[in-house]
Image 1 (cartoon, helix red, strand yellow):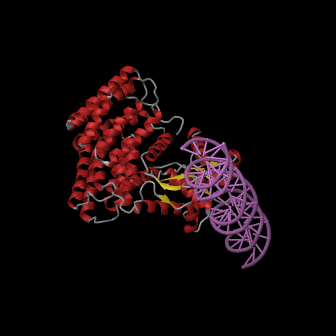
Image 2 (tube, chains in turn green, purple, yellow, blue; image 1 turned 90 degrees about the horizontal axis):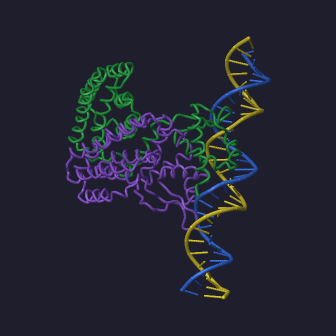
Image 3 (tube, chains in turn green, orange, blue, purple; image 1 turned 180 degrees about the vertical axis):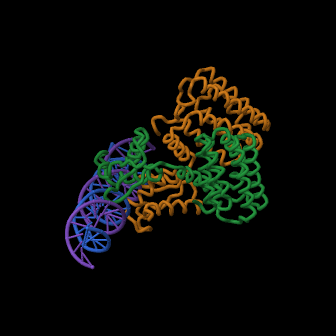
Length: 230
Length: 230
DNA sequence: GAAAGAGATTCTGGTCACGATCATGTGGAG
DNA sequence: CTCCACATGATCGTGACCAGAATCTCTTTC
């Protein structure tokens, strides 16, 4: 027997998706939902918390407040991954291996499918070089993923980047490393911009191989991604 | 200002992960959690619903009931993906392209890394042939993913298979298709069992290419994965 | 006249007390 | 020994209530 709150969750989620409710759309208030479903406030609120966690709604207080539709982004996916990684004690090595196989393909697809505007943006972003911090490095990979024109690759890369961001604090990053990274990113960006699929794939591959080497050299391969939990 | 229930969610999740609480471990009851956190029942229950949705706990009623730790499996990941697919109207073509690039790598890794026992199991499973229904076909890919020895690939493949299962109803599957699939699976299994990495990769690749062709031939490439929502 | 401040309003955030319901354990009656 | 009734312990769900945040309006004050 499914719980009453689960039914409410399903009902609202289906409504948002089927009716293609736009971001910012105001759903009925708690009170109205209670009346519509003939349920108590607690039940409705449990459902709201779950939907909130799904990133499907946002709840604001005050007059003109209420329950609003939001666009679920990749963060939920990222935390679902992070939870599994934490439970399974997934190692950093698994992470770099995965990227080493997948991201070159993404670069290839990006070189093949990106729009002209995207290519320009990518080149421009990498040329700002100096300003590139860790988060901007992650942005680079996200940009490439977005350019590949395949939702699944895009979600995938973004999601693991979210996990990665939490793990990856400014630990032992030298100035040289940063410069190397910037240089590699620029090179990949140029290949993609030029539509050179093979070149982009190779460039991305060697970039990630370098990261893999770095992990091995510092004995970080067996480091758990989330030793202390999410 | 984070909500009180969110704090409870974090606190319990951290506890489960940090203390490596085993599956089946009984957490404090609602009442005890209320007292421990100095919060009301509604707040605690909101937190429980969210944790339940995460697949981290299970709540049972009755004496000997209570709140129990469970092992989060890949289903949450699957539904997070499904939600994004539904919102973005992701097409079936994206799905098959993704698999076409990723799964051959997984087959390669499986051929390289699987244990002897896993190889035997895989061969045995494929040889039961006839009995293989749709769900067993999915199982095949999951088995291979598990054998590749990389958590990320494993989670990934399993998660998209969960999404796939919902979409893929016994629509237009002929007997011949099934036989072809069984044959391809057997061939892949043998290559993996033999440790032939190149062969396994090629076999998986052509297997998925066949699926891609099938989609194109039937004009299903642009079919949304979840037209009606999750 | 305009800006600042003091309510009034309308929502959600959260507490408390109570009953309903479900699953397990227990004690008899046959 | 089996089966049925009953108590028990936990979650499920309701209803009324107050607190707090955000917006609007109206008044005061300079």
